[in-house]
Amino acid sequence: METKQLSRVDLIFKPEGKEIELLKKKLNEDGDDFILELIDSGLKGRGGAGFLTGLKWKLAREAKADQKYVICNADEGEPGTFKDREILERVPRKVFTGMALCGHIVGATKGYIYLRAEYKYLAPKLKKCMADLNDEFKKIGLEFTLDIRYGSGAYVCGEETALIESMEGKRGEPRNKPPFPVTEGYLNKPTVVNNVETFVNTMIISEIGFKEYKKLGTDHSRGMKLFSISGDAVKEGIFELELGMSLADFVEEFGDGDTKAVQVGGASGFCVPRKKFKETIIGFEGIPTGGSMKIFNSSRSMYNVLHNYLDFFQEESCGQCTPCRVGCQQLLLGIEAVKRRERPSSYLDELMKLADTMKISAKCGLGQSVGNAFVSIIENFREEIVY
Amino acid sequence: MSNTENFVKELADKHGRKRESLMPILQEVIDARRYLSDETVVNIARELDMSAADVYGTASFYSFIETKEVGQYSIRLCKTIVCDMKGKEAILNAIEETLKIKIGQTTPDRKFSLSTTNCLGWCHKGPAMLINDEVFTELTPGKVIEILENYMNR
Ligand SMILES: Cc1cc2nc3c(=O)[nH]c(=O)nc-3n(C[C@H](O)[C@H](O)[C@H](O)COP(=O)(O)O)c2cc1C
Ligand code: SF4
Image 1: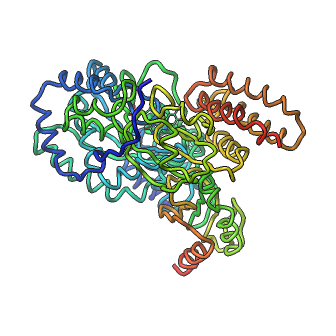
Image 2: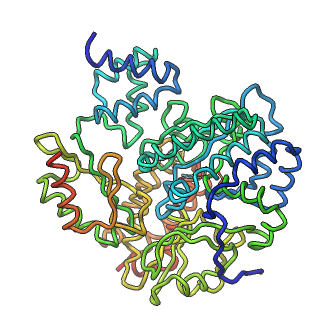
Image 3: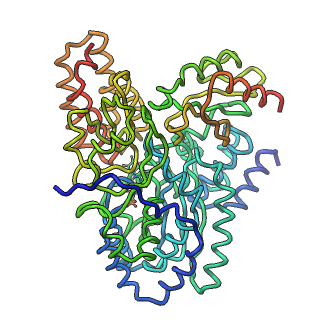
């Protein structure tokens, strides 16, 4: 499989300035052409699920309705992710013009950013930026207005249909899919929901062109990605890297020399032990990540790590479906019981079966992905859970 | 008209009376009053022509919309793994000793409430906490005591 050397990129945080000019240019071009460019660029959503962005916009463009919406998902609740916050702090105009570009392409005149409550300190600056842009859009003849909505402390509201429910004034409980938001989203109108970083990428593609963009990354993972790096690292923070590097190279660069495991993709991602660093590619062909990279050295107890994640899921499960509501609880109680020797270590195998069942029977991505961390930690660090 | 009735009416005038107006209204109640009282629930229900149970059921879903009385300043300490690794426990002890309250409690003067919360998005600068909307990072026990003393004098 194709891998890339670890290499730094500097596109996302490049100073702002050209956005309106780029947008203006796109207003005079054929929207179908840009959709093709986006699809050709290979850009996949940066929020975790990795759906082809060009295809999403195409479906929304084709949907027939009197009103459509663009929503920027700034709920960033995945443990260990903090890159969207940095984008909104440093280059918000790129996000907002990306939303406007989307509005123009799909035929939506209204855009909302859904900002998590934890980031409310950013609101004054963002509102000012949106107000300025709303004026600038008008000046260049684009009918598109930006507005802001807030989360209120619920991780599940990052799931796009829960986010929509929340914006509609309801409990943040995910909907059944299909229908997908591109046909029935906010107020049952066609809606594009994209991650903060995804919108920035669409602006970068409109600036440098899809051919240049495609040179970055691998066949399955085009482009670059922001990584939120934390834990036992020599360098913590936000780094923009080309997709497709091996985890071994990553650890070489960021680990503290004693790295035991890396949790790729946050609590809903996978735990990779040292012996698998070499064969693991960071990208859609290997382990995809919304950007969360947590590094653990040999002083850390993987029982504590797993316990922390299960406690998180158990609290954040919306409780709507039984496999997840009861499953999260039982996984947590189960490892506690094994630790206290109230259950034999073979009980972990029962729990792994439960995690597998959750993967196929839970209603949304939250319940479906609890098993990722659970199974990968138990399989690789069983003795730390038992003793 | 009671104080609360007026207040809720103003919010509904500002945000609208549709179902999708509910979250902005609830959030502004929290900004202004820190928690959602039963009286407020009833008033919102009346303004938006919903049942009070529906308003409460929606509000109680969200961890940042308090439905029990809390203090003027809500302290939310991050308990997710990296902040935990970086010494969350020592910060928690320092807060508990300074304010003489435990997680889930409010000081008798109704000034501070303490809770823990999930990832705040500051792992690289942990331990981190929020006081209302304000963020504090790279905490040490000494630093957190100083911050609290600052708030006590507000
Ligand atoms: C439990 C859960 C939480 C999620 N949280 C986020 C989030 O905070 N931000 C985000 O962009 N996507 C999140 N997603 C993914 C969204 O459902 C959706 O796929 C994404 O916003 C689409 O944008 P993208 O294609 O640009 O990635 C979450 C999904 C699940 C299941
Ligand atoms: S999987 Fe969990 S979070 Fe998702 S709908 Fe079911 S209970 Fe809710």
